Length: 480
Length: 93
Image (tube, rainbow over all chains, first blue to last red):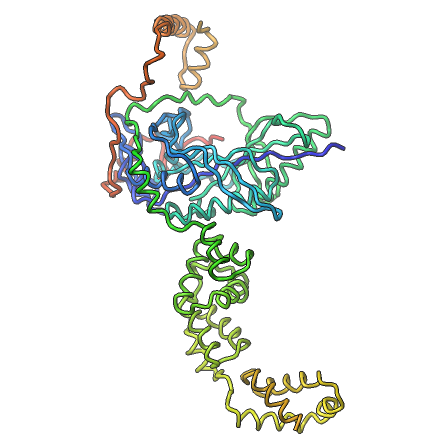
């Protein structure tokens, strides 16, 4: 049986976080009543003149620089012609042969290996309107169009066909999302559609250098969906070829419920976009000085931040990767550190208990009810010996559920750690009296019997005893 | 040379419905235009930079400030069919 390898490239659309649309001053705000954030320009009425939003250009250049691209000194806009009801002008303003940025890359880690994925280009374009269907696109009797999204600025980021597995594709998209999020030009929310991903995929016998016939897959709304869709499609194409069939070049859609990709072939009309320069828009010339200025405004990016966490904070590679993967997580970490500058401890609590509790209640870190200052307060309480680490876990659980201050929870529930020697000695004496068997074991050389006695003491104090002191005091008593 | 089939293809892309007589006329007219363009093709343009825009203008921008919107009734006034605030269209895949 021949060995197969997949060849995968991604086209990612990212909505830029500007106040207004790319070529007019209609609002980009999400969730307005249908067809109310529109004007004659984005509705494509005759005689209007589109003018480029300066911020869109700056954001596109910023994203291009963050992706290690060369910025084009000369760039222009073109019309991509096609008929579709979500496109009121019957063409989309995009960039064809002179995109704003080209020849970039980003580095991923997948299957324990580092790999550099090329970025072919980054270009600016306008988004189309939104079609609303009743039920699914297959069964809807008609469609409704909302043009509020028409003209919302997008950048399209096209990768080289450098990925070979579904996992690499996922790692690429995760990294891309992180980088773009750090630059602040987009929120990159896949569920809300501000980051959308199409995939080109083909398979070929391992060792072959020519590409096989590719299929394009759309409609994957999460990282998990991307990976699952690719795993399915790779298997599907291999099956077709091994059965002696051929791959049809087509667009397929991912059916999340059934876990399959489905052909969207409607008409066998080849795309014929007849691109030509948009005469309404003038060329964009980027002087070096301006590019440098934008470069200077780039924040610390995920790879640099990760390096800093490892080198300056002594975190493990894994912890540093997870903490920097999403900007929200990393920003949270940084803020906790401002109030409690012990990176390893903060990292352990965030990666362990906090993440666990958030996952269990399916809450994202940005919606977490525990503020970074509150987490820092909790860690200070442990640090000062007010509560034990064990008690802190239950306090954190309550904080996640209620958003209350840790000091308040500790006070309300009387969780202050018992570090009073006199009080602890009294409890320990009681434990010794009521567990003569363990005491005997200990005295006969079974030193591990002390563990049981520590446990009994903790139990008697409902976990509030200072564990270090309990150990020390018990030993002293038993060795007397 | 443009054939009648090319004209039919372009008409389909432009969503134009042409009758037989029109197809004949446009085939001839498009060929005349291309013939003229062919003469231009013969010029030596080795040292001429490609034209992206007919005017020597560059970098015209707007600031990112929200302006007036069309009210919904006006925005959808030309729609053949409506439903609520939406424009209603046949389902298209």
